[in-house]
Length: 112
Image (tube, rainbow, N blue to C red; front, top):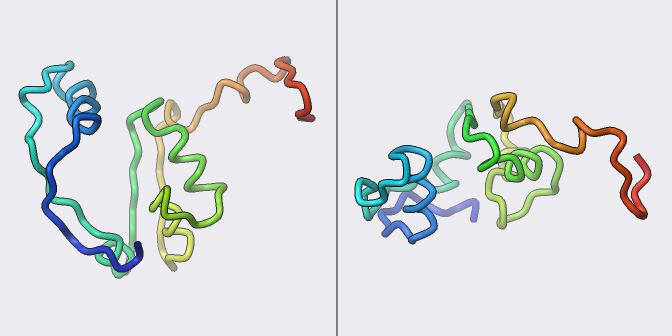
């Protein structure tokens, strides 16, 4: 994964629908059928990496995994943990979590 390079690829239907929802009010016909994607090789070779997440609920899980999980190819963003100068910035909506806003919730087998 660390050596993956820039590539041109067809967007799968999940990507098209997500982009349509976030950008074009659901009008999927405006989403390009193909994308150019930077590989991790290019990203990790940068002197500085700055990531900004502003898509709220769409990226809440990915943000938590990036911050608190071990490195895993399932979430390539976790590979930034070994980068010497990577900063992740997220909107409040992306960083919030319902459990933190409801401290009275109780879960079996979970001690908070």
